[in-house]
Length: 360
Image 1 (cartoon, one colour):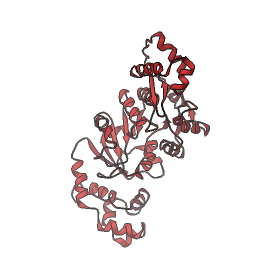
Image 2 (cartoon, rainbow, N blue to C red; image 1 turned 180 degrees about the horizontal axis):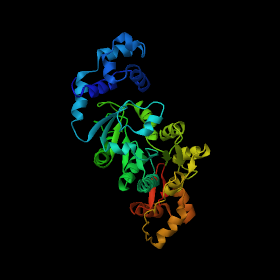
Image 3 (tube, one colour; image 1 turned 120 degrees about the horizontal axis):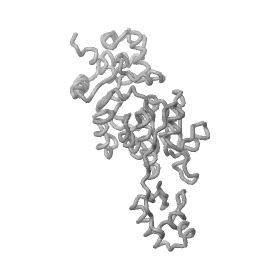
C-alpha cells in the first residue's frame, strides 16, 4: 500500500460525520487500526457503531478534504498526532474521551511537557489581564507550559505571559487550524505557531461553532496538571474548564478579587467549593512541588502628590466617580480629568458601568 495509507485512513475517519471519540476508539479496539476500519464492510462496522455511522465510513470521507489535510501537512510546522503515536500527550490519555487525532501547528513537543492551564473571562479587567500575564510568565519560568484557549481577555494575556517565560505556551482552539478565531488574535496566533503551538481536534475548515468551544475546554484542562482561573463571572465558560479539571483529577486554583466585581464571583464560588486560593505563582508552584521563582521586580512609579490623594481615595475596589468625589472632596470635572491622566499612565483602569479600578 502507499506509504501514507495509514495517515490517509486516520484523516478520513476524522472527517466522518457522527463518529465521536468514544466510537472511534471502539472501532480501533475491534479492528486493530484505521486501515482495517475503512476497509471493513458496513455489516461488520454496524456491530460496533450505529448503522448510519457505519454507512458513512463505508461511503468514505470527502477525498478533497483528505487531500486538503495532506497538503496542509506538507508544511514542516504542521503535524497530525494520533493515538498510535508516541508523541500523543500522555496526560490526555488519562481523560475519559481523548481525541483520536490532534492537528498541531508549531512545537508538538510542548504537548507532552509539564503544563498549567490559565483561563478566565473574555471581558477581562485591565488588572485581570495583567494578573494573567504575570502569573503565566512566572509559571512558565517555573517550568510549566501555559495552556489556554486563544480567546480575547484572560486567554490572550496568559499566552503572552507564557511566551515571555522559558516554557512557552499552547493554544487549544475550537476551530480548524486553518482558521484564526477571534481574528483580532491573528498576530498572537502567528507568534504561537513560531514560538509555541496551536492544537485542535477539529478538522481543517471547521468554523467557529459555539458548540465546539465548551468541548475543547476538556483538552485545555486535560493537557495540564492544574487549572488557574484568573477572573470569571458566574456564567463564564472558564468555569466549564474548571469543572473538567476537577472531573479529570487536576488541581484547581483561583485568584480572589473584589466582592463588588462580577468578574470575581466565579472565582469566589470555586474557592468556596474547594479550589485553592492563590495570591502568587509561587503558591501554585509550591502546591505542585516545584521550585519557587523570583518574580520580576516591579518598577517604582512616581506619582505627584495631588494624584496620590486620589489614588488613596480610590482604594483597591472598583468605584464610580460620584463615590470618589465624596471620598476625595474633588469636583466631578477635576476627578474625571485626573482619572484620565492616571489611566494614560497605566495606574487606573476603566471598567464597565463608569467605574474605575486602581492597577497594581
